[in-house]
Image 1 (cartoon, helix red, strand yellow):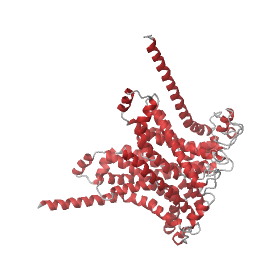
Image 2: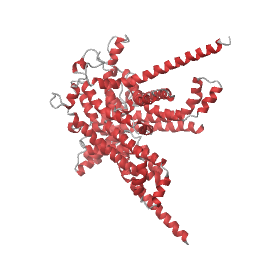
Image 3: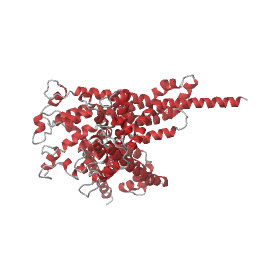
Image 4: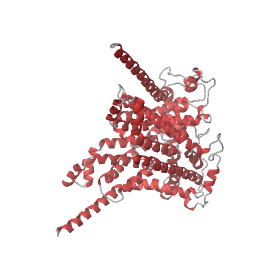
Amino acid sequence: MNQPRFLSRWNALQAREARLAWLLLFPTALIVFGLILFPAVFSIWISFHDVGLRNLNDVFHAPSVGWENYIRAIQDFAFKYQGPRNLGAAVTSIIYSFSATALTVLVGLGAALLLNRPFTGRGITRAIFLFPYVAPIVSVAFVWRWLLDPRPSGVVNDLLMRAGVIDMPLGYLSTRGLALLLVIIFEAWRYFPFAMLMILARLQAIDNTLYEAAEVDGANTWQKFLSITLPELRYVLGAIFLLRLMWTFNKFDDIFLLTGGGFGTKVLPVLTYEFSFQLFDFGRGAATAMMLLVILCVFMLIYVRVVMRNVDEQ
Amino acid sequence: MVETKPMNLIRHIARRFSLRQIVFLLILTFFLTSILFPFYWMVSSSFKTQAEIGGRQPVYVPSALHLDAYRELFDPSHPSFQNFTVSIINSLMVSLPTALIAVILSVLGAYAIARLKFKGKNLFLNGVLMVYLLPGVLLIIPLFSMLANIGDRMGFNVQDNLGVLVITYLAQTLPVAMYMLTNYFRTIPDEIEQAALIDGCSRLGVIWRVTLPLAIPALVSVFIYTFMIAWNEFLYALIFLNSRELFTMPIKINTIFNDPSPRPHVVMAASTIMTIPVVVLFLALERFLEEGLTAGAVKG
């Protein structure tokens, strides 16, 4: 006789708990969905309409233009591939984000291996290694720009000229090819600490008896690295690669501040910015951003297909 | 024969070990120089004079701690006075509220996800995390036109409005703040809260009296992270701020850098002022913060 009553009270309690949960989540949900999810969907709408400065306040009555924004974006000389001397933003983006990510993970792996064994001063070294990642992007980008100054008073020019590597000062960030390479190196310099921390955490968790067993079998350091460390790190390396790839692909600040998107370093985020906030052609900007998003989704799919499946098989 | 063999072995080991140490030291030195030199260059250049900056050769060590650059930033009587104090205040006025509100809202949300049972919980958490991967440049266009519309109706300006900036930064930081705190709350044993509930505490009372005091380390790191994200943010501030009086530090530094007459020492002085608090804060609280870093707290 008591049981049904007890159950209904239990249900009422659960309902109250759920109500409280949504109440607590409400402000976050409102901000996140109102300011991220809705704009994301709205951006699809904008990409099919002619939106400029003049009708920004009356955006819902903007004329629909079908695929025209996409066509104009793709046919723009800054977007499309026109041979190896002018790669266009789409190809540059892909080259840039893949090589910058690969280099970041490699440098991070090196740094993690370096810090994996105890030595005096490891704590402070580890803290210093995080500096590039923690410091504001504006400061570090401008320091780099100034180190790479094209005048003979630039530090890199001065050092290389003294060492006899170059005779004349170089404009590093204003030379096609070199600029892209330096932007990639900058990314690795700034973001390797993230990879390092994740790899370090995984390294510390590897079972030491594996190494002891390998030593008994007479394995040398390199063999131990190849047959124990790398397989153990496989999953974390894949995860870091994906995360960094997506973030690098989306990244606007770094290239904008270093080169302004000039000299063969124009990537899709910078092009999106230029269409929207320099030409004030928001429709075309949104169309470019949507293409960015589509490529991003392809990366995610590849990752889920390839990396995740391999992890499952292990 | 019997004696030389172990001797050889020892010598062999000693030689190999030192070689390994040498390689280790070389790589370590390479890492440390390439990391620290740019920072050294930033701080040392901020103390150079215009002559030392504009010379034909770089000056590696300033002749004295000249304050010319800092005077240009702070001294109203300087001919090209930059009024950097205002930018510092603006940055604080954006970063502190962002961090404070983000902590409060994410405590509520994270508690609900970590402790309460309700339908759609995982969907919500995953949705929030997926949303975090959306690019900033994708969102800025619709956000700009959306907020311009709302602003028109409700009578506020989207541009040159620090409040608008705080709200957009909240949207950027809340997902990760919630993710970090949810993970932390899950490590606090449920039994402590159950005991308080049985003793007649309300849910909010439990959060306030039991969970929060236990979660102080996590709260500190969430606060610092959201503060840092807002402090460093560039793109949204660049688009939403037009008036010099409202520039946050990153935008102000960008403006000084793009000035027709280049004054790198002033840029470096401003960068030093912006960088030092973040790096010092980070070093002081490193132990708390590293966990958050690996959780992807600093996006990008």
